[in-house]
Image (cartoon, rainbow, N blue to C red; front, side, top):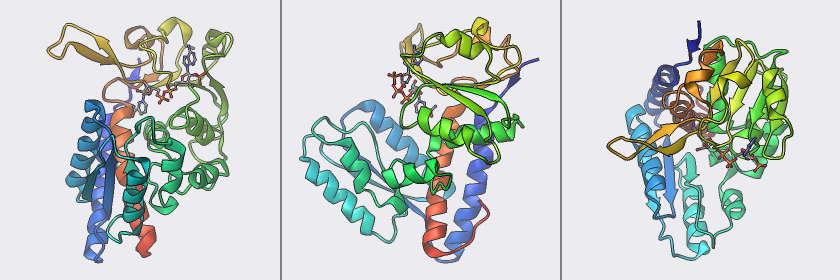
Length: 296
Ligand code: NDP
């Protein structure tokens, strides 16, 4: 019987824990604050940012939002980041990606104070993650780690396959899975578009994390019987719905759920966890900056 890994339910628990920590901090005179910065006219990016602001409100984190004109020079964005770096009421800074082509994304990530880099993308934080001393684990792989823990998925000694090697999902996910730590110690293979014989790799995987951004391309016939399947993908496909599209993962849920031991749905799997872990990192930042212990 396949177990459905309910990301929404686990995210509710994470958010509730975060809300308790916010209360502890607020009682001690510190209101955690998360600043979002948007330099884009893309409606999807606008939606992501407003969702993050709503999430903050729900758990009592102060949401601060700054719009930067998409045509403004890069320096305008850098000055905005500098101001937020210096603000005492801002504990986390998130610049919504992608930024316009005339802005160097790497420069943006380097500009954010690493102590406020709650996405975990600053090179210092990437280095710390790789060294096994993470300050902030990037939200999506951290969320996956929490899901694996919540469902008692044994990672120690397991063969894990991560499909995708992006800086925000695939690479940090693989780094977490190989670490000598709880929800780690997996023997991890990272696959990408140049991987030969992906099918053979998947066929022997106890844990599959799919993050390629290709709709439903991993089917049940490619999976090992009883595998745990974590579908990170969020892909829009044309559909006969009110909006004219539907969201699907990288895994063909119907066939995969006949083979998998446990599987995340899309939506309702990894997505809610990604959002919850951003709140978690913001509270962690506020707690550490002010030296106030919270039960995260
Ligand atoms: P990227 O496009 O940055 O990376 C995709 C990766 O998949 C690349 O490493 C690419 O390889 C690899 N890939 C492409 N084709 C294949 C193939 N045929 N076989 C194996 N690997 C392949 O995507 P992201 O990591 O940003 O996102 C991945 C998916 O996850 C997307 O659907 C995105 O929307 C979703 N997402 C979901 C989140 C959530 O909260 N649930 C959060 C972030 C992303 P190469 O490097 O060789 O090009």
